[in-house]
Length: 146
Image (cartoon, rainbow, N blue to C red; front, side):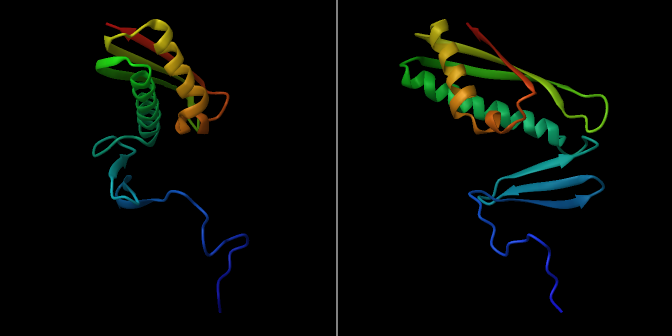
């Protein structure tokens, strides 16, 4: 007897793949197909909460875009860091209600217009994580040029 699940495809059409393995308690190891690992832990003892992973993914995606765009605009960054602030719902599913990304930028030729344009291009066009999130999440970006 063969088990068939309605709608299941034997071959999945996907560009990416990741794997999640239960380690113990509520701790899981997530691995990308290229071999990068991350620990998720509901009790935040051995790894980050999944929602923190989402915040980090959003920050990483936006940061990569902003640095790349500013470099193409001939800005010479000497440093860039980011704080990401997330507000969750108090009731299940305790999803994100708002996100504030705070960028700290330092370098030469960093005009406010260029930074605003880089952030706008990332959030509206290039950042795959930002554009994958629900439209009703309030995502804001703040920047500081030193």
